[in-house]
Amino acid sequence: MSVIKSALAASPDELRANREFYEGRVADLRARRAAAVAAGTESARAALREAGQLLVRERVSALLDPGSPFLELCQLAGEGLHGDTAPGAGIVAGVGMVSGRPCMVIANDAAVHDGAYNTITSKKHVRALRFAWVHRLPCLTMVQSGGREVLSAGGGQPGVFADDGQFGSILYSQLRMSREGIAQIASVHGPAADSGAFVPAVCDEVVVVRNQGALAFGSNAVPVPADADRANRQDGNTDRLAESDAHAIAILRDVVAHLGDVPRQRRDVAEAVEPLHDPVEINGIISADPRIPTNNREILLRLVDGSDLHEFKPDYGDTLITGFARIKGFEVGILCNNGVLFSESAMKATQFIELCCQRDIPLLFMADINGFMVGREAEEAGIAKHGAKMITAMTCANVAKYTLIIGGSYGAGYLAMCGRAFKPNALIMWPNGRAAIMGPDQAATTLAMVKDDQHKRDGTSWTDAQREDYKAPVRKTFEDFANAYNFARNTWCDMVIEPAETRDVMALLLDLAGRVPAVPSRFGVFRM
Image (spheres, rainbow, N blue to C red):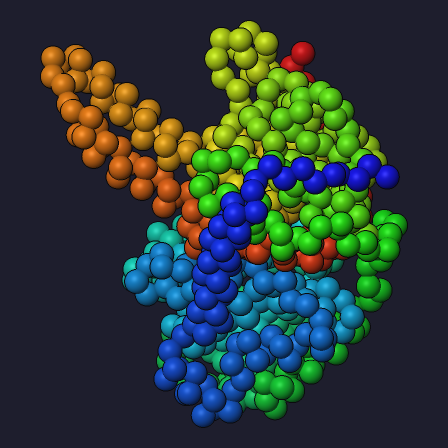
């Protein structure tokens, strides 16, 4: 046992003030989630009900095993991004249990622009498929879509047509997964129009609801009645006809029940043990002032089983905490920032990542970092090559990698702690999470220094008040960009969660990781 002992330095009054501030953040997150659940217009929902159809979340709920959790991805995608983009971007996506098997469920929300795809809808659908791909999850797609929005403020053609990661990548991902034996199953509950008809058409099996669903490359104005019957009898576009939404969902569940053996958990899972301190206490530990650093050992001891961390090199490179722990019984290798990255902490990270790869242990990067140490001494100590070692190890590691941004994650530090570009299995943020090229204060100061130099060259000057007036909008721009909800609306993160939800979310993710066959890691050249 290597139990982390709490050593909180904050006073009770500070903890109380922090907690009250953070509870406001939690309330804001819950309100945003509620808005995403209620997306779409009341008139559109009423029309669907009048037609005898289930709403999108009713379909998802009916598909899942009763009482099982649903891990929703990119729930806040599109929120406030364009005037016509609803929170959730007109699609529901997430992982849930169907007939005893973990599956990726993707469902168009016909109450939002008839289920049509804009830029963020496409990105979210692609992201859900890529999450399913890396975890080898069968994909169940519940289709009701008018195709692509070619003239919308949400992107139009540039946002849905031409590039990787847009609509075509949906089909590419489906087909490549099918080639690898990852099942692609669709149910069609309404029009599948334009290129949207390809989404079910490229699936392994397709169910269409009679007199309701239809596949058509024309617009969604193509009449629906009898199209499904004709497709079934003449075109072979469907494998089964359903009499209603509920019947189609029952067929989907039956298809999943016959997909063969459910992948087994290949790792030993210990009995879950609660941390010695309640995770809810994290709300009071994170300062209301983002400039005040957090002692992240206090975070760790409230997240890992029994507050027990078998620390690796505890006396070396101590601005990065590395060690082995369990979360709800699942073993994980943790890298958690506790300051800027020095050469020593980067080298420690490199060795620790290699150990986890050798032992087939998933990695959890807990990011709270201003970046790498800079300055003459750091440069002469080889910070560039040692930082490169860490990034090489992180990039080439073939174990599951999960990133949790628990504070600020800036510059090269964001990259080294497995930022989005390095394809973590999932990237998660707390409501206080932030990520950017640099922090708002640093950005404002840096650009003001550039302006200082310009004044010197021009032989002019400015007052302290003018300098501050210049810095304020720069600071605001960087704050708005770095915000967790800006990352969520752009699908740059997979979810924003409460600290108290972290153990449950990580347990679900680690369970998925343990059902995927191991892949040996091979590393590139390490600079010495």
